[in-house]
Length: 99
Image 1 (cartoon, rainbow, N blue to C red):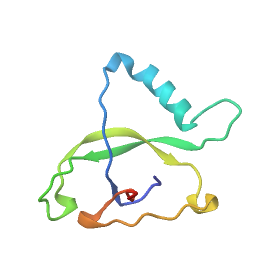
Image 2 (cartoon, rainbow, N blue to C red):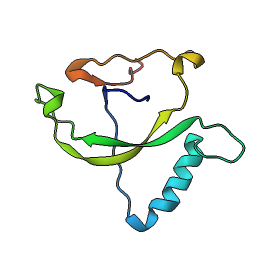
Image 3 (cartoon, helix red, strand yellow):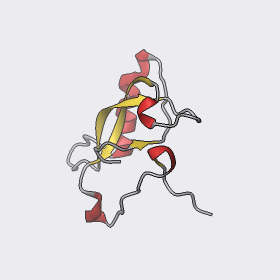
């Protein structure tokens, strides 16, 4: 995921407030963020979160439920040979499912 205006379908997890610091340390390790001696693979960012509802004709009408941390790829993905995934039905971006 990179900064932009598309909406990306995903999961939003909630954790107990007293666990957040420990969880972020582990997620940062998994995502390659702020690791000593290494350039970031992903950058942790704050992003707006919306409820995905079927039957909503315009994604702009989706209910905003708050903010969450997410991870953006830290460099232009084209440098690594990645191709942009274009928004499809309901203007949401979904990773293609293998058949």
